[in-house]
Length: 251
Image 1 (cartoon, rainbow, N blue to C red):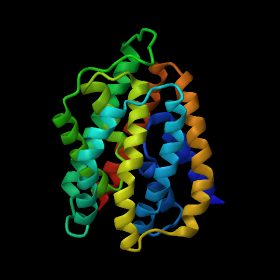
Image 2: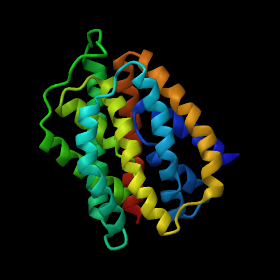
Image 3: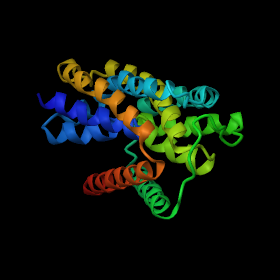
């Protein structure tokens, strides 16, 4: 019953905020008494259908930027494999602390925009700023590396990058992020399955909650004002970043 509840929470957040869900699922599973490596890896295969379920809701409104998605995955897929493999050799506490600080700053930036920025009515089909392929491949590589090292889906990195650096409308960034998240979760899943870190007993009820709630979350996000989404997203990132920094500081 508890994995079903956790999956539902994770799925709703995934659809609303364009994240894969591992960043929420791992601490929740850990708090429920699951072993650390199992809590880290088990949500990863669940990220794939959960993210795709949310992406379908965005796709129906033509919010996914497919060309950008391809370039990001081109750089991100091999980097994710390398990052997951490197967890056997790299402690990376300083890297994790820096990542937590960066995420906290990004969350504060979104909260600032939610408070000060008045959005005009967003047009769903508006084209984002021109995005050079090599830059997107590089961003995909960085995102994939962090995704593999930290077992996160990558959406928590991609959404701020696409909105703040490339000028994507927020909902288009959320939609594009979810497709990338699903793709980046695949190599990490394969590596952790090979290492024996994935529990099928936890995964199945997790999926039963996460998949339908992800679609619901994305459907809600499409109709919510972008200012509200910025606020909720900023709160979610800051909360996670503080939790992440606290856990890493204690280790």
